[in-house]
Amino acid sequence: RIVAANGVSGDAALMMRELRSSTVWELTVQRPTEFRAVIDRTGYPSLGLDLQFAPNGSTLMIASVGDGPIQDWNGRSQGHKIARSDRIVEINEVRGASQLLLDAARDEALLRLAILKYTS
Image: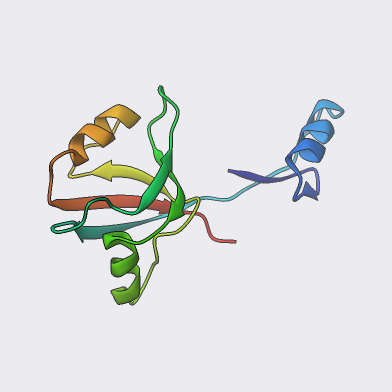
């Protein structure tokens, strides 16, 4: 993702204004790290995630993490934590359209997730 344009950062509208007013761009790009999590949702009514996605997108963006197996996994994890704004890019070895990701999780007790995290 682009985090700065010609030295302007922090406000997307200001960065866009800067890009529109300049013919030369110096962009600062931040790459995410990918990590994996295996989630057993046996006995849980839901994952406890609020997800957002575009119908033609290829990720599921985590809008919030509530009670459920994800929060429990976070409590046990020694490394990464699954958090707001992370993006799920793979479920049970399926990558691709958002709907394919959702379908890969349907009726599965064990979810093998690949998640993208942008650090601050």
